[in-house]
Amino acid sequence: MENPLVITSSPHLHCGMSTKGIMLDVLIALSPAAVASVLLFGWRAAAVIIVSVASCVTSEYLSRIVLKRPQSVGDLSAVVTGVLLAFNLPVSIPLWQAAIGGVVAIVVVKQKFGGLGFNFVNPALVGRIVMMSSFPKEMDNWVLPLLGSAADAKTGATPLYTLSQGAETTYNLKDLFLGIRPGCLGETCVLALLLGGIYLVIRRVISPTIPLVYIGTVFIMTWLLGSDPVVHILSGGLMLVAIFMATDYTTSPINTAGRVVFAVGCGLLTVLIRRFGSLPEGVSFSVVIMNILVPLIERATRPLPFGEKRRLKHE
Image (tube, rainbow, N blue to C red; front, side):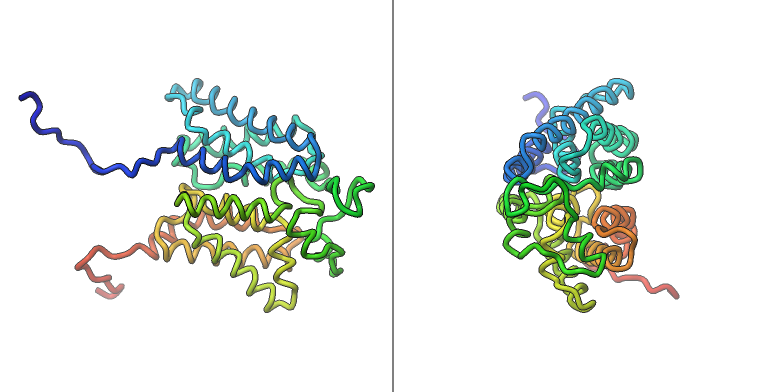
């Protein structure tokens, strides 16, 4: 008998899930929102998504060659980043600017730190933040959906911008839920996002802890501050970010207690920025700030091994 004993490092059991399989599930979950974006904003929405994905995939392919690392395009993570970046952009964004956002997300945020699993902040959110700083006019040009009573108009204010000015939004809850309002491509149709989120939970790709705690924190805080919590939840990118971006494996805590702390922090920062900041929306900055704090959160909430006691500072 040859090699009767094979010694390898743990883990010795495999759950059957792979990076490519997980990313494929995420893409399936994102597909309802992608279809909704085309129905709401027209075929240019598809063009923005295609350009963003192509930029991310090309950036990953070329950067891996330059850095002399094994190719990772096949794991579909760059495709997911491209779709999420496009979902955080207005449909009117110039296509070349969407391509620049993809380069920033992949080269600067992801590959510079070693690739998938090594980035400490969400690439798509940082790409959006950089674009907001570099192209503020284009990133603030909101197009009304093709459906609804205001379909003949071209541009309009988002519900969150209206709320930030101290006025009441003119959109009813049904319109907000179905996405018949101005906003980024993938954030408007809450119904499509919920369908995707339910699929990911059923497939056990994500845990519902972060989305539920994040959204619940926003609900409670806006209610305490005297605003309509349901309008705040259905407006802006809260649902998109809470379901698909705050739950990113690499940039969120791995234990339940850490996830709760992380999600509460995201919710508090989101409401504070929306209510007291100069920007009507705060989800991008909130999640990126909490991404940076994840190592500290995990250190503070790390469970003790069985049989050990937590040491006091004076010991």
